[in-house]
Amino acid sequence: MSGAECLYSCEDPAVWRGIYGKYWAVVEAKSAGKGKTSGKLLALEKWYQEELPVVISARTEPSLTCPELVKLMEWKLTRGKFRPRLQQLVGSNTEEAVLSCTKKAFSLLPNVQSAIAELSTLKGLGPATASAVLAAGAPGEAAFMADEAVESIADLRPVQYTAKHYSLFLQKILHRTDQLNKVDSEQDWTPHKVELCLWAWAVASQIQPLLLEKFSLNDAAHETKEKPGKRKETNEQPSKRQKTH
Image (cartoon, rainbow, N blue to C red; front, top):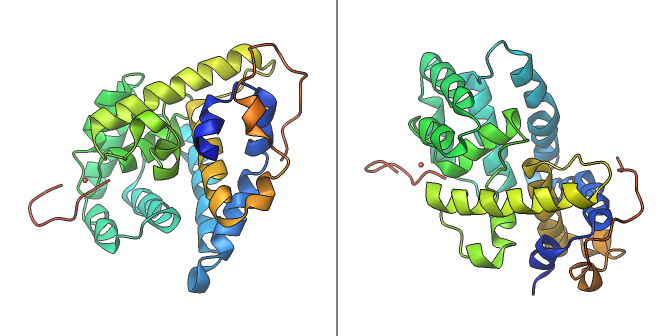
């Protein structure tokens, strides 16, 4: 069982909270390893995780502008596999189309699958990018379909960039979110937060394992649901178009 897979099975919220506390250290490590674009990921990550959600929630009706959607795609491609053609496709959407589509998608929640389908009508957007839009504006209902997070769940490997696969992924994430909130006195776990932990563990395991050395999942994965002591938290596929994710 891989580390990230073992994390998904872990029922100890103290372990999850500790890993969540390492999230930005993992982002910094990944950003530093980007060579010529070192530092770019960190700036984009802070924008996506901290600034964009505030902007979306401040609007009378949650939505994204075209420049915001283009920047979101830049974040996604910098964080994962770089596909410049996708950014061009996203940028070819009109401002009116992006505002109308994202507004409608958020209005369809809590029906996440309908919202994903609506967002996927925009050029350059598939289920993965659509899930990033929803996770930014509704982290309590959606999780970003990051490769590392999906691959941390054995039943979901290999990753398939389809609405059906995202639905299966979200079901797994919602289950773990519910379980953590049942045993954690703070009850502040969301699908997006769970997904961030899975990503952080998988990435750190590859590029900086020392960040995780104090966490032992071999025992934690088999914990009973006994409530632990409270711990504070530290701080896309048209003809001749590139496949969208």
